[in-house]
Length: 153
Length: 139
Image (cartoon, rainbow over all chains, first blue to last red):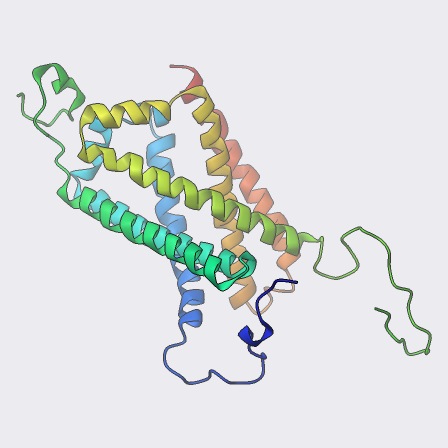
C-alpha cells in the first residue's frame, strides 16, 4: 500500500506545533472566508456589467475593455479581483493536492506548479492593468477598433 | 468491523454498497462539499485562461478581438452558462460554509441552508440564462 507515512500526521490533541511561529493554516482558513465574501461582490459585479448590461457578451471587444480599463475604478476593481481570486483559487487547489496527491515528489511538483501559475498570472495581470494603453498606435484601417474617446490617427 | 451494543450482541457488518448509514456520507453535507470542490477546480482553470486572453489587450486590438470573438459563439455561450452556474453555486455555498463556521446555529441548519443555496442558485440562473442566451443567439 502506497500512502503518506503515518508520521506525517499530527495527533489532533498532541499540541505539538502550538505556539511555534505563525499559524499559516489558520490564516489560510481565514483568507478563504474573507476573500470569498469580497470576491462574491467583485465577481457578481463583473459578471453583471460584462454579461447582463446591454448586449452582454456580444458587446465585449477591445473598445469595451479599453473604456473600462482607462477608468481608475475598474482598474482597482479588476486588480483586486485578480489578486484575491488567484490566491483563493491557488490555495483551494493546494487543499486538493494535500487531500489527493500521494507521494512527496508529486505533491511538491503539483504545489510548485500551482504557485508558479498563480504568481506569473498575478504579475502579468497587474502589469496589463497598469501599463495598458487604450489608444495604441494602429493603422487607419483599424482605427475603428479603438474606444471612441481615442484621437483620430 | 462489528460493534458491541449495550445488549452484548454485536451488530451485523453491512455488505451494502450504498453510501449511507452515517449522518454525513451521501447526504446534503457531502454533496455540497463535492460540488464545492468540482466547481472550484473548474473556476480555477477558467481563471487561468481568462487572465491570458484578457492580457491580449496589451498585444493589439486585433489579437484581443479575435480571441474574444470565440467567447461569443453559440457553443461558448452555452459554456458561459455552465461557468456562471458553477460560480453562483460556489459563491452561495461559500456563504453557507461561512455561516456553518461562524453562526452559532450554523451546523444545525446546514441542511436547510443547502436547499436555500439551491433555491438562490435557481433564482439567479433564471435571471441570467434567458437574457444571456438571447444575447448569444439573436445578434
